[in-house]
Image (cartoon, rainbow, N blue to C red; front, side, top):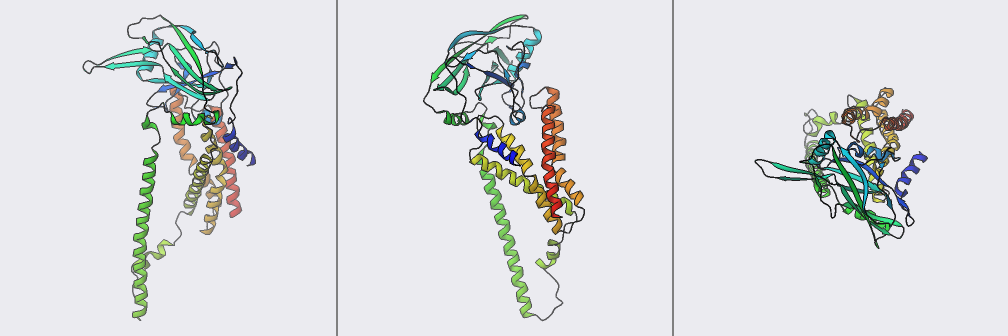
Length: 412
């Protein structure tokens, strides 16, 4: 447990100091993924498109959170050096056949974007340009960007911001071309000094948004929904309190004014025995209560860690990793709560209760995830988890579920 807690703490401090560069030192640019602009969760490996690639693709080492986030970073062919500007440098030359051209056209028509990573900063742009016009007949022009201009800002010996544009270059039209098509891809790099501190560069990253606003979290709507839920709960509580208050007042009056002890029950007395009767399926009830308590603790832990600033914005998937580890840590909560309630309800089949606590959430979730992951794997999406990551998650789950079992047994 101490090791897991230490790992959670490292998630927040890791990378907070930032990497430093010497003048002229190589700056590695990683290509990550591509996908439709209006569906950021459908992503594919960047090198699945017929674009510039090295002879041997070298993938970067990723954390668990980055893999869960769908990242598949690989070293690119861009040659960048710290504070060294580049103008119209040749990236590569490609010869595209009919299949390559069709693949690029489909990607551009689906508004595919690309994502690069430089010094843990995401850089996003579009593969090409789609110009649509007219209704009957509908016309559209598909063009490919063959030049990228990188604007990089630095402060001292650290990189502060990075973005990409297509400044000064027109896209290449793919509508009236025939295979084989020879293309030359170029790039430029410009460096600009800034006074912004490295510690505050994450704020700019949070404020900027490449994806449409509709895909972002609408905090105002969430707050309104929460307020509405609390108001409804308050109204129900007030109504119940008034009903019970009237019933108890009537009972007191009847006891004082009447000597007849054979009166029929009415109001609250009709259901008071049912309210306090043990549920018929105690194991299921206790298991649901235990898992719910675990998720409440998990959500509270994530919120507290976020408020404490323990999630570095430059660490892709840090929150995913924290959620996985916290889920394992809080498994003892489900075992304790379920076992304690199961004992109070007079339960005896504690083995079945242990199995329910461990599987009542994970088994349905695993079945649904298996279907979604199989579809993603079939389509070649980076959202499909590698088998090594699946094995790691299963081991974490088994380790986490060992604690609730021990906690539950100790309570029985």
